[in-house]
Length: 407
Length: 222
Image (cartoon, rainbow over all chains, first blue to last red; front, side):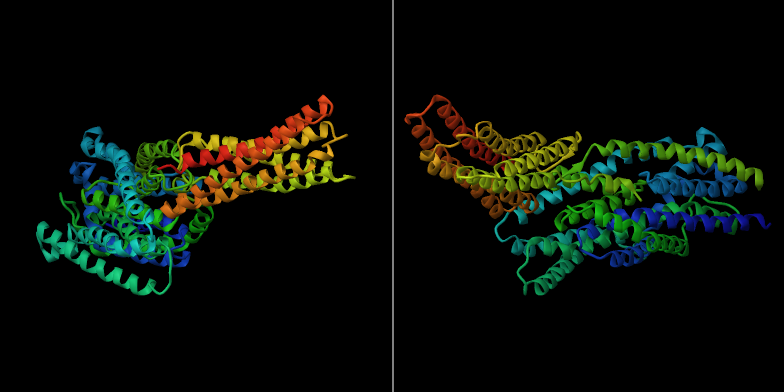
């Protein structure tokens, strides 16, 4: 049997291509605000985003990968290994094609929803409409509304807090230093918690959720205090404004987004690949498939390559286009984006970083934080969010038929 | 290139507002030169300065239309868009009034301003120059406030608005002096009408600058 191996190789190629696309496309979401606010240079952004996407993919990623693979399409169709193999490959190719097309035409689409759509397409082809888990699909539809909304609310609140506690006060610089442990601390709290919950790393530690919460809180407080001590030591020498403090903190949140992005988006490329891999290695797919770490690593590297190769172009445009984003705003956007993505992906929702980032900017805009933000564009963007699923599904169906004809 | 992140960010209308304020400021200088020239004995360049003001007014008008035309529904700003428009209208009225004043002079350039009134008109013209120039400073400081929302910065803007109000009061007084003197002079009725109306138009420059300040006060209200 040589055929499955051809499919496996094709799977690797398109899996990598998909990951590459994710990196090339979504790097704007994670690093846009930091680069625009001049917290980091383009080169630093590419380097950080690359490394952290790999880390996020490997250490936080696996839980989501499971959900996307078997959540929306029932495992019934996986009983025929041949159909499952072709299906997973066609889903991967369809999603990669749609995302490439979108990149080429500058359409705002989500890589997450492309893969969800193409999985649905394959499911319908293989087993009819009955194999689709409509409940899970509803969760996807809900995520179009929930994830931007959640992100809007967080960004709005965080920015309002910054204005109230720091910016509007006399001597905003000292206020910023005073409250820096708080902002660093809550950021770290969410990051540590996401490491401890439902990751291979967290499961090895085998600690309960209450212990995890306690550990995360303790670590966050300690590290937050340490970080603010460092900030004070480093910044006290010069008299600066509050934005300067957030410029340093923002480097941290940019990393936070890149980490969340890696964790969340790696599944889009690796999910179908994991199915192919297991079918070829074991001949069948069980109800639950652990995703091997090396596949996550493979996906992470793919994303990093995409960032490295296309990041420059994207971020140069960004620097020219976004000039009004200051560090406090950038921090709020980043924090909201990453928290939304991490929380949602921990809940098993296929959330899109794009949606979360858009929500974050709008949240700060609603808090009157920016000179001008176009809210109306959201409705245009939403059309593409909604279009993505059926288009990817249709493409996947066609490719499935073609592949069935070939193999 | 991904659109969603970029397309939300649009050119800030405050940039246009600042640009518009700069045009208003530029016309202050031309206005002063034109008045001084007109009062001098053999004026050759009045028309030149008047044309310069007309050109500046045209440019300012274009900026005004650009700002109004590029604020789609659903634009999120630190202020409501109707506030911005009302502010812009007042700022634009300043430059319109400057142009009107020079036009009004040109309609009857001979015999022009009677020598007895020259001193009073110089004082009046000088009184409206400062408020015109204050506007661009006010816009710049207000933009800073919308960036950092600091109370200190808000005070700076409020102080400028207060200054504008005082300057308007000074200009009002200068206007009254001119009118009082003209109406009690023994000259022909046409000249009286010409001078009274001129004083009113010049005085209205400061009025509009003050109104712009009041609009700004509403914009920075918490």
